[in-house]
Image (tube, rainbow, N blue to C red; front, side):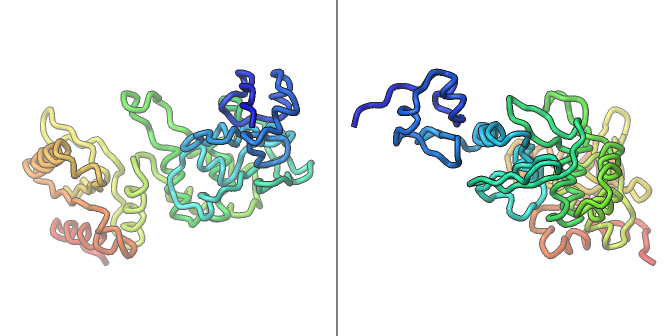
Length: 312
């Protein structure tokens, strides 16, 4: 078999549409070479192209060959790297949405949707049209539980740390999420989204922190502050994941990274700071979160009761 001629630079080594390749100077014969896969009509992918973990290069050609469409639902959920459990989000099919004035997208490898879209609910990232984070949150509500929708909402409204994340603004505000719901009354899943928004709080840094907070609420414990700035003594300020300042109880969720030697030293220093200030620090790990976080709830309840709180 003859060695295929290199593809023109704009489409070399990446997924592309047939029209893009022809415009770049490729021939129809070159596009029939066995070194190119055709996952769907009008799309080619060079065999051996390393796509993972990048999602955008694979999805972009599907949006280009399907007029007036944007990546949405589970595909947008993965693109925005949203936390939370979305059933079916790891499937191979690409979700595309169009305005409800058009036919539903139908092609191999695509799950099509139609709906009402405002102009600011679609954005372009590197040539990929995709639903915005706030619209995506609404679109996935039909398949997600209320707590998992809250995990996503907490993620969207949290205030980032500029030195670590390179941004200073949250992805969305609670008011913007509420506006999205008001725009699309009657959308499947909107009741769950409204319940999730009611229990959304600014401050959670991770999905486990949100799940812990919600488990404590279900157990009828007092509502804690979320990542509050807490001055333990002059010059010593900490921001526990959750805090009950009236009872001098703080709660920290410790993920896998807390087993690293350097982090262990920092965790000990943190606990000593709270102890010197007369606070009780409750440390929660993954194992405490099993069975609807029963062990975690029991630890926090015991700490609060030791400080004078009573559950009536």
